[in-house]
Amino acid sequence: MAADHPLVWSSHPQPPKPPAPEAGGLPPKGQRINVRRELMGRAGKTVTALWGFQSSDKQLEELAKALKKGLGIGGSAKDGRVELQGDKVPAVLAWLEKQGYKPVKAGG
Image (cartoon, rainbow, N blue to C red; front, side, top):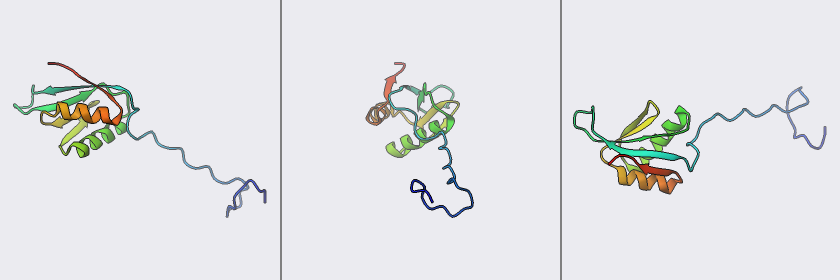
């Protein structure tokens, strides 16, 4: 057995290649994310909306999950946006800056 190969219990001389990592995890740090408060079309309920991500749907879901857990609020990720329950714009801006993103308050 060659010294550069670890012991492998198979009949093939080369060890199996590890599986390729899936595209996942949080979106790349440093990207701009727009944040604003919205009321329209929600029966008077206020939500904090985030959009402008350059990431996969899985990454968006994971960012939404981390935001909800970090801020202790409910919400969802859909249609390339994250919507959080309530008017939490200042808290979301602070959380995103702390995580390394570049949040921008959109609207008034």
